Image 1: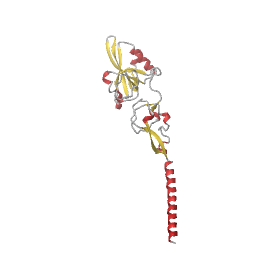
Image 2: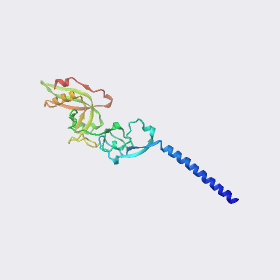
Image 3: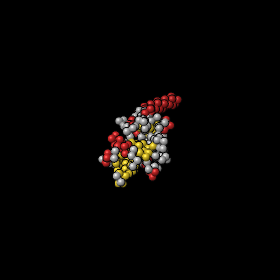
Image 4: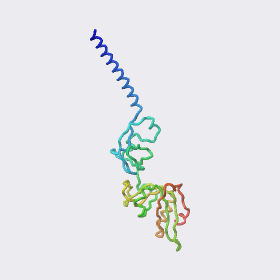
Length: 220
């Protein structure tokens, strides 16, 4: 009788154990089904740097968190592409932060390329906007005037016209996004040896909508 009681107790414990295990396992599966693996940056990535497989790791996040979001889930949409801005370690990859192709002078003839003065070459990567100024001589008068204000910088180039992705590299020229007619006017002015067009960095607090000084057309 004693052995039967012990045996029944053991059977009861095992049965309860399996029942608890099944409940726990089912709960765990239910919880895990609420999460998804999402790619994040395994290290800091500089602006316009080509993203490789080594730059990516994964983290588990709540599915509802990524629904209807801009977060990229498929690494095929990341690897081999370029970051449109600096990406910090452990940061998500967003569709708005990925660029498929970066600047090629043959493909972007409408974007304006202007040389950067020496005093700005080491610091201009800290700025996203510039004004374009004109210096020169016209009918024996010295001219100094803004041509276009609040212009977005698209790319920073080195001396070989390569897009800069390294933080410690000086900028030789910048690519600006201006309307086509403004770009054409700037190109004509730049062809005149009496004039010099140069950028002036813009404080983020003072950036407004792009402003075009109509005087730009009188020089072109």
